[in-house]
Length: 400
Ligand code: PLP
Image (tube, rainbow, N blue to C red; front, side, top):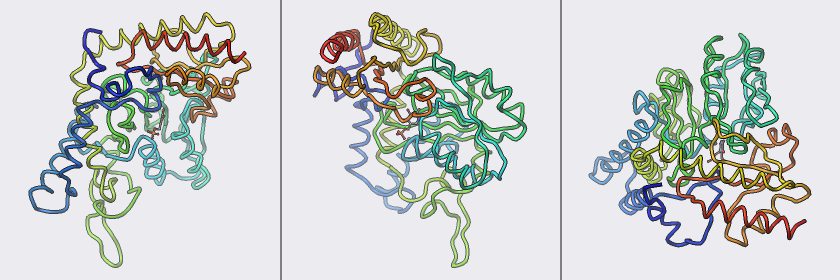
């Protein structure tokens, strides 16, 4: 990489020795995002409420953050960007609000590769509303079997809700095939972009979906905020999810009317400081040379996959090729619990995650009870990958 990135992350000033490879769980915050958030929180006022200058400045900064996110997503307008508390809240918002427009017998298509955040809300909707869930299976390499769209997406399908990239396998979904299948029957598409956004700006117009959900903390912004993007016409049709201040037109003792989106979906005081931090993070991301970063991340991924392939006891959970794949690598070690692997590597300052990764249906489909995961971001380097591989060799010796 020709640009020096680590010095832009306060984390590395404090923990230079850490090989942080848990970026799929949360990425480190960029200094610009932190500064913007601290700046806001130390001079704060509520938004949309009061006419004094400080409050007007807060409202302006909150609106500016929305505009930055809209640019990052190539959204048609700021009104398409709803701030939530994170991807989980965004996905639940669609399951509840879009869910209210569904009736018994309507079908929602998911995949077996979904994070629980895009699975459990739909299971609960099935119980509440009697909708049917149809599940796209995964292939043995963990990729979603989009060839099955043909028989699983029927005239009764109202929505395909699917991950843009798996948090376990790193496989990127063939979104074009999903959108084409949905359009053929007049269904809508919700993409869970939680993992994708860390690896560059997303073009929602080009993707052609109706909804896109992500979290700030996975794309170098603060925790506590996320986004639901929705096509303007779609959001306009949806009833509110949470109710309270800020989302109404007028309220009487008998009834209430609701504001237009995005305010309709932002009940209560929003995460103002965090949204402003996220705005700064995506602004920074838009200045980066993404083609170069993708080449760099692929080089690190290839090194990591080649290193893993050397261990006979290791089984990769996910595609072994680099095509349509992000640098998220999960694997099992025969006879060794993933938490033990993580602990031994943790003692060497290699930060990994182990367990079911909130994707139990996927692990079950791939015959796994738990996996260890290394996930890379743009600030990782070869030394991180090598520390991981050397640490794994050591772990296999001490744990076998
Ligand atoms: N979807 C995917 C694919 C994820 O990986 C995650 C988190 O790991 C989520 C949704 C939920 O994100 P959050 O916990 O930030 O709401």
